Length: 111
Length: 113
Image 1: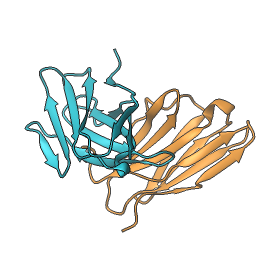
Image 2: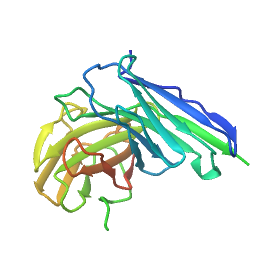
Image 3: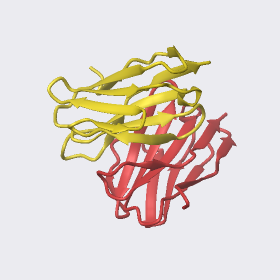
Image 4: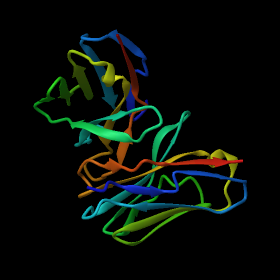
C-alpha cells in the first residue's frame, strides 16, 4: 500500500461546481496533514493545513478522519483559477517530521 | 518578503559533470528540505536539515548525491558524477520549525544529457 494515495484524476468540472478530493494514508501515527496546490511547471504551494475538527478557508473545506485514515478537500463554487494539481501531504509518524506527498489529483475547471 | 531562493533555475549539462544546486531559505526559518520531482516518482524528500544539521538523508538516492548547509542562510545539493536519470526538478523548501508548513522555492530544472 502506498504511504499516501490519491486519485490522479483529472476531475473535469464546470465553473461553479462543487468538487471533492479524498486521500488515504497508511501510517496511523501521522500527526500533521496538509493540502498543497501545484500549478503546471511551478512549485507546490501550501493551500491549507488540516485540523482534527475540520477547517474552512473561504471556498475550501478540509476534513480529517483519523479512524479511517483519510483526508478530504472540498472546493465550492469552483473557479477557472482553481485548475491545478492538489497534493495531499502527511507527516511520517509522530516522531518524524518527514513529509510524504501524494502524487496529486488534477483538477480542470472549464468555462 | 523574499521567499526561498534557488539557483540556477535551469541547468543542462553532460553526464559525468558535477552539478551544484543552491538554496537560500526564508530568513528565520530553522528547517530546510531538498526534494526531487519526476513524472514517474512524484515529489520525493531527499534530505532535510534542522538548525543546519542534517537530520535524515535516507532519501538521498546514492553516494553521488551530497548536501551541505554551512550556515542558516545557505545550502547546496551536489551530484557528482551526474547521470541522465538524475534529470528532474529539484525543489528546496524551508519552514519555521520542523513541524510547520513548508514553503518551496521555484525549483531547479535539471537536464543531464
